[in-house]
Image (cartoon, rainbow, N blue to C red; front, side, top):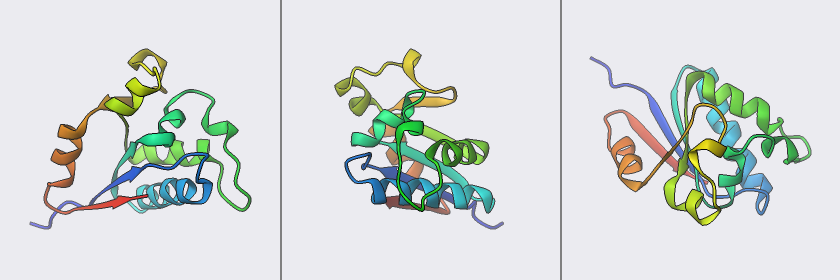
Length: 122
């Protein structure tokens, strides 16, 4: 039996490093569109994109709009906001986009240790 194809991406950059941020979301969305199971982790400054409307504020020339990328990612995977990153920013479960979960390092480690999993950090 073939191993499941899963890609776990941890994005640490937000508006502070727009190219790195956009690359992470773009890779995740392209992988999702290709049939790869995606788990995108929002950490550091990317944590803000778990909030409604924040992705629409992000602009980078020649890059796909973040709300469209998020929609594509959610269609084939899951978006998780880091527990500590959320707490440091005062973000609670009730504040985040629909289908975004808040979870910690234990869940991240569990995901990246699975068979057939590839992990990237941006």
